[in-house]
Image: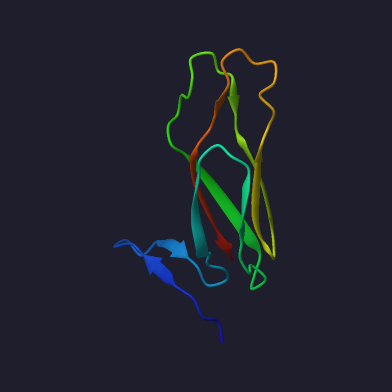
Length: 101
């Protein structure tokens, strides 16, 4: 027997079909521009992540270092690319959301 959630609009059209997979958020971490990690058990499914920057434009020179995200069954890890040689470097801060589906 299939389990899940299905939602139809007033016209009878299927607008959401979550009978096969539905993501479960396991954690949220604020990234402050420094390398780091968040150890968490993500072995209960396929891990996923989403990064939401604090703002769209960080510096007019566009010399930014965005986080490089790595995820596996044991946790989430992030590093920032090198800012050496940049005149006005700015690291991109924001919110990292992660979980499994």
